[in-house]
Amino acid sequence: MIGQPIALLFPPDRREELLGYLAALRQGHRVKRLQTAVRHRDGHMMLAAFSLSPLRNTSGAIVGSVGFARDETERQLTDQALRQSRDQLKSVTAHARCILWHAEVVLRPGRSCRRSA
Image (cartoon, rainbow, N blue to C red):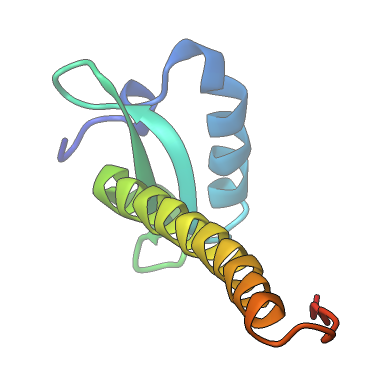
C-alpha cells in the first residue's frame, strides 16, 4: 500500500494503539519490530511485524513516515507447531521415565525410584 495512510491497515478497535505509534513518530522516534493484528488488503485480519521511521526533509523537519510490514502468520503457525511438538516430547519423556523405572523394579527388585525434577 505505497502512498496510503497506515490507518487503513488498523481496524477501528486498534485506533488507540495506532495513535500511540503516530505520536512517537511525530516526536522523531522509530517504532522497531512492532507486532500487531492488521487488516490485509483483501480484508482478512493477519498478524504483521512493522517497523516505522519518521521521514525528514533536508532541514530535518518531520514531513511523514516510512514503514515496512511483514506477514507473520506463517511464523506464528510454525512457532505454535514447535510448541506442540515440544510439549509432546516432554510428555513422552515423562512417561518413558516411568516405564524405565517400572522395568528396573521388575528386573531388579529392592531398588528405589529416584526421579529427578
